[in-house]
Image (cartoon, rainbow, N blue to C red; front, side, top):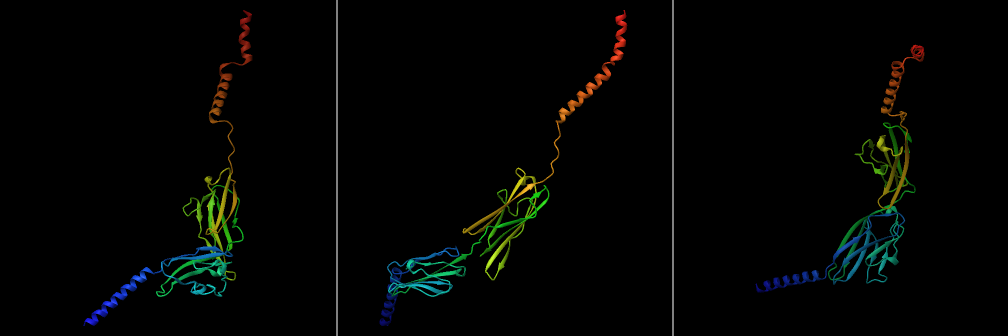
Length: 296
């Protein structure tokens, strides 16, 4: 009975000591740094930070979608080793226990990247962190605008399309009227959803946005409206195109003179007409009246 109790106590002490050792020599604070989006052709460094405390490092392994492409083992010579994986080109000279560098990344390398950190014996504690990276293909050209008319009267409709081609993923499109962003709540404007066309053979995408505008006086400054389309692909690329639309609303001919002056003129005309016809007799009749005066 005493033997069993001593055994149980020894086992308890052993597990307690093991727990203390594990806590003192554990792997903590593993953090992975992978850029969310990069452009095709870039050189990219992925890093993995960790705190081994008093434990020794056993291995660092890097995976893309569960396929190992790089390993660092301090006890081996050389410690760095790259594995043959399609489209992955590891720069060994710039890779080590906390980072791996990939040269000339391609769109095919979009995916999840995993860093696996293992502490050495006796614990062999392993921590894994995962992050996603998108490799984008940027458009070669700025977006283009096609418009049904560049001259319009107030109250008439304008239809325009903006297109950005040859990217992966598709570019985002934004309209502006006189530098003010167009939204679904913008007055006199109907904004249609962006449509995307995919070229599966090339793996590229084109985006297109359609807009309809009822021309309003507020749209024109100096007789011109500036319609602009901006295309963006994350923070990697920005392009823009704009078109000028002229206000061709017929203008009324200006009225010469003001109403008051015209009224005053008419009053004067009426005054002088009345004066000439009503106040004074004709010159012939005036002479006839004056003759008797001189005869006397």
